[in-house]
Length: 276
Image (tube, rainbow, N blue to C red; front, side, top):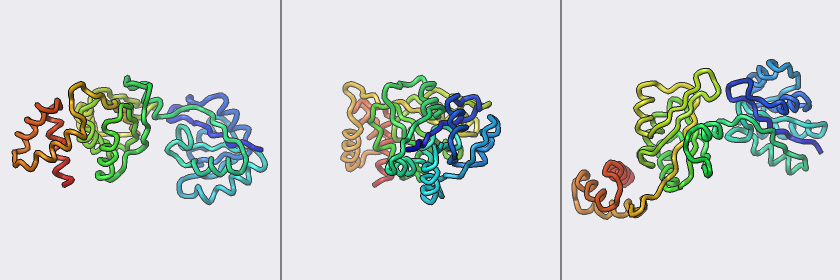
């Protein structure tokens, strides 16, 4: 049986492609590419003349038969616009179909923006959770962040420039002022990695309007001895709101009792009032 090769391509710098990847792209009978024009420039740069067809989010199901037919004749490569295919890009359904048809699937490792940002972040790399792009709607974004607020793993997200400031604000509201690394335009001419806290990142990118592609690496939750869990604090705040205390007074009192910073208690109190 033939093999579908999942070939990682550069995320910016064209030198970030392996000798094996170039050989595979030269030897397969067909390349399925997210954008044939984008991949065409890479192939032209390296003098590779293998035929290409498009395989993207809007035609991925109709292209399955074409790729399976090509596999009957020889090996096929799948590439995305940048980085590792099938990771936050089309490819999952194709891999399933190829395996079901009895063919092999082989990864050809290479560039991967989430991993590149993680290892350069300065944050723990022993356990991490990659969640792709944050939801576009704020209500969905806040719900997701709330569900992972107490996980100990380093968190990795992708974000677009026009939603970066909103995302940073919601991260502070749900996760508190944690350490973050914001990687922009990795491996490209204007590569930048900002390292600091979430509030410092807000100040930085308010002063310098976001441009390019962003990967966010956020520190995981660290439990403080003697500090209430967020679930406990939320429950206490919900009950205490019935006392009629002013929010500032309530936040100060609950901060003293719970071990949480007053600013974080106040932010949490505001979110409770919004969702009531």
